[in-house]
Image 1 (cartoon, rainbow, N blue to C red):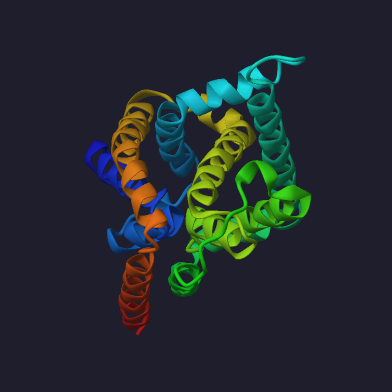
Image 2: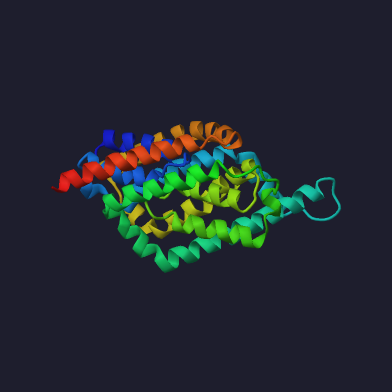
Length: 272
């Protein structure tokens, strides 16, 4: 993987990680189209996800500070109600993360094997299109994330676990899952983005031994890709927040279907 390819894939990662179009699916298909089949490794994706993780940390830095602070502030204070709601939100994030971890423990090896199957990835991208399209037709909900309850948080966590499958958008499926269970639009997106933080950190911890073995030009190339992913992802987050609130995600469904159709035709013709 040369420097230019890493940066281009980083830009692609930044564009697609939070847009409901499956960043992992795009990476698999892009590498297939560019003839980089041998580079379909988890380590590269982990590096690019690191870039998008930094973008989330910067964008939600105030929220993360408030959530962390609430864990250490108790008693009768002016902000007691807000702190209580923040602690509840942290609990739901933990429960959702545990649910994701359970799905990964049971099916992780199977799901990761799909990274070597671009045709299946293209079909999963079409599934993402249907999920995103349906989410726009959900009525406006009123349940804030801090009051979603245990069942909703676990459901969203399970959905995030299933989204390990390349082609299934993590952000699109978790946002849709939150909307389907009654969480209001703005909170659905916020919960999805915050939930991505422990998932990305866990992915890096699971591959820590491989990351520490990277040296020389490969490390420089992967790091450059991560920086590109971070810069682009930060710009994308605020844009997506506006679209979610106005229920205009269906345009991404059209895009997913178009890419899926093109990919299926290309892959099948390439095998003939």
